[in-house]
Image (cartoon, rainbow, N blue to C red; front, side, top):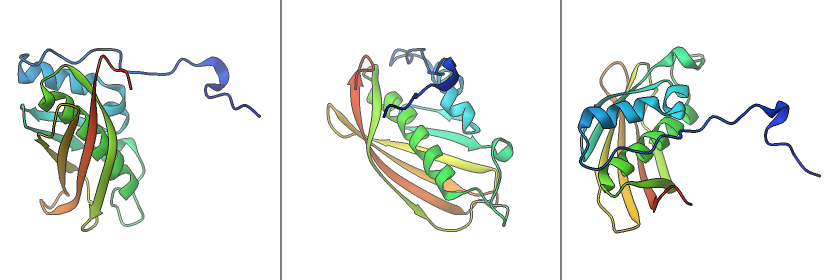
Length: 158
């Protein structure tokens, strides 16, 4: 039995833009991150970007909240994964793409929106980068944290 991964023939949405050159400005990197369809689909917006740190805001207008008004943990993990990929590409300074190979998320308390998502690049090696993500709810208290390892691959080849 085969499954049509694209029923109805709708073209898949992908981020076709290459990342900026490593020496590009932080504003160019923020613009690149904010143009990614997956960033927009998750309700994320990059509000600050540097070589080793970035901040995003997770807007709850794009998805339903839990019964208590909090963001679902699966959405937090998905947002963390997306932010880790952006931060790994920025931090690696190698014009490479990032593929998550491992991540662990801890949920500390309910995540009341908007959620501030802070990422920190941790250098690894030539082919592996590490990123730590801390998330704060509207009250400014940490609600979740994620640690991830990402494989760096030039030219987007997996």
